[in-house]
Image (cartoon, rainbow, N blue to C red; front, side, top):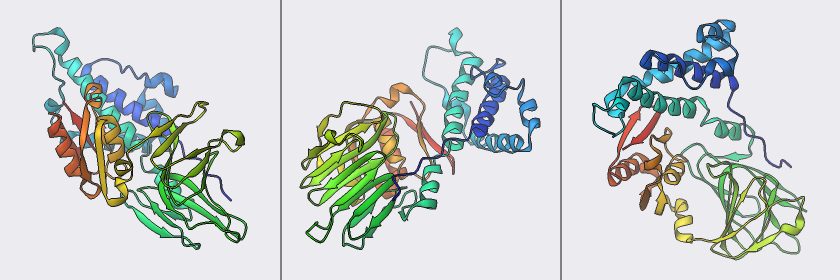
Length: 342
């Protein structure tokens, strides 16, 4: 039985291609060398030298350039950060240019970085998977029901002696058929952890986020037993309904959190509920379902709080409502990205 498959890492060649595109346009915009130091990272003196070294490099650069070209759909004047008066020395063309370059770099890294790669990998190897933006309901052979969130994937291994599901990536909600003398316990594996059903309903989420939490487990109905690391069985703990743990890779301390189940499980009913949540956390959730990445151009904006209930099938509408509520603006590059600026 698979215990989870490694996520593919961003291709180093695409990283270099993105860095060279950013470098070349930064020089054209500001007249200065890019602080990203693409030359040092790739070991070549210029983008031309890097491109000419292999046909694959030329193709990667062309793809990165194509993403950059889509930025022409946006008026650069709209990308200026609010700041001091125009006669301030810090508001010259170079500073404005670097602001545009910073946003472009974010988009390039998000798009070329392979936002879809974990989903594609999961769909290639999993017994069951959901597409990006899709929530799928499954009924397993024992009668247990699984709700797969967007871009999620599982493997299933059932026999006379085990009922095991491996969450490869994403999030899943389990409504478990009870065990008995003839029906073995129901266990969910995710990375090095296991979650054993002592009752019926629970959620498991597995993947990287900005806070570094690799695994989140939530008890919904009755109790569950979570073993954060199967190599240390004595670390097992029991969660009751409304309790959650978030397990960070390599962390030794695990705190049990009390959460609002209505908010936590709202995605299962097609809604997302936020209560004084940071915009950075909100966009991370919205990106589960958005057709393209939603990015934030300002750190100050990222820390602003958002409250409200939004439909999963109306993510664009949610972005508009949120941006207006925060006094921000949203800009979309079709099939590339949407980003928020103050």
